[in-house]
Length: 82
Image 1 (cartoon, rainbow, N blue to C red):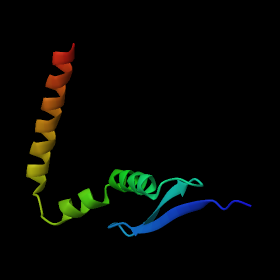
Image 2 (cartoon, rainbow, N blue to C red):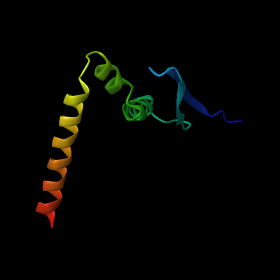
Image 3 (spheres, rainbow, N blue to C red):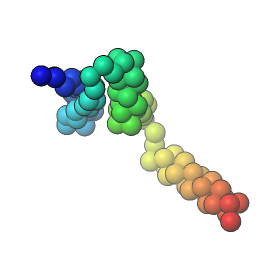
């Protein structure tokens, strides 16, 4: 009888809802590889990014300006590709 192992970590997000990261580990799989999978999934959740964004306050006008600059930059990249 084989048991299936998995890492389960519950993250309490900054918006007060819980998310669970589950990384299934196959029998005989290297623990380093499983940790690498976990790190990738954790980065995709964006918890650290959100935490850093909440450490400082940005005025709405600054956010809008940065958003506009990013949109212009992306449009220019698409124009160059065509």
